[in-house]
Amino acid sequence: KADVLDTAERLSSSAVNWARGLLDITYRIEVSIIDQEFENIELFSEVLDLLDGVENRCLSLSRRFAAPGPAAPDSAASFLATPNAVHSEGAACSGSAPHRERAAHDQPQLQEGTAAMVRWLGEGLAEAVHWRRGALQYYLIATLAGASPPRPLPMRHVRGAIDQLDRMVRT
Figure (cartoon, one colour):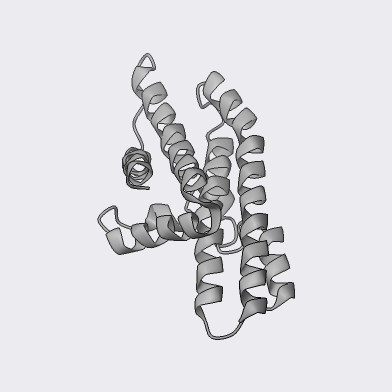
């Protein structure tokens, strides 16, 4: 039992460092995307998928440690080394991350994802991930609505922005 707890603590520390690094790296890209008024929607989708990957990783860690017995050290290392392994192949380009495919009213799953991030990253970092995911989608919506002529609003991002900001407030 002590080995499992030690492994969990080390994985939590690694997950925090990974999530902080990812937020640092994607921030500069996000600023560029916003400054260019979302001309490169594919890059926007890739960044959003990377941010979605934080929640997916935390859910995966929670599932691995909820199962009987400790996670194998090599599987834990490969887990942290591949940021979006739980996404289907090509998801980073398609904008079809698993959380965006869930219905907005699917509260148990939404709460599970937030709870997993709080468990592995802490409350503040979980809140920051929700904020970034929601704010980025909000900026997309504001940019498209403010364009002349206004561009169509992708409803999945309208719902996504509301969902993430709601989850941030509840964290």
